[in-house]
Length: 202
Image 1 (cartoon, rainbow, N blue to C red):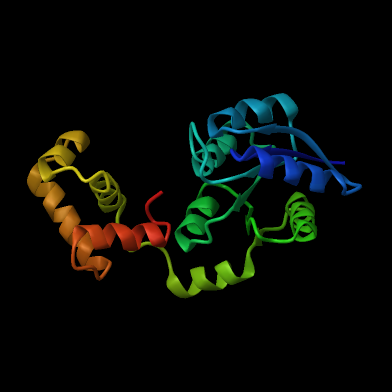
Image 2: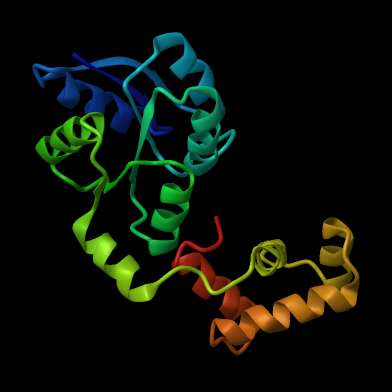
């Protein structure tokens, strides 16, 4: 039997997914959690073969949970199951150690087959998203530019952002200017919108 842990904050969807997967003769849902910060403990307790993680969850998001699982429960393979088909999320998930990335609107039979492939050592990615990721490439922003742009999403002043990140105001302005230019945006707000839409700000 393939042992699966579900991590999803929407109780109804989590229950429906557990019921559907339980119909598969070779898959057993051994546990489920509704928060990202419960994932590692649950994996250590239930020792699943696969952890199915949503991205947006309270506590910590699914991407951070995947990173922690790599270090603290390396025997568990990670699949991301999300509503958000953003190429940035796909890149971040693969970098975090996920071996599967599917959208929630995929048929249940496709999900079950993807779980079997992941357990067999294969990588499974939503085909349309994989093509988009290849054509679009990864984020052009440096880690520091990403950090500054994410902080700017809180609508603080340059001085407030600088204080929060322990940088000078001039350094923050330079990073924001570089990010705006790289993203082909006209304003800070537009740059944030573009980066979020592509999944480059998580």
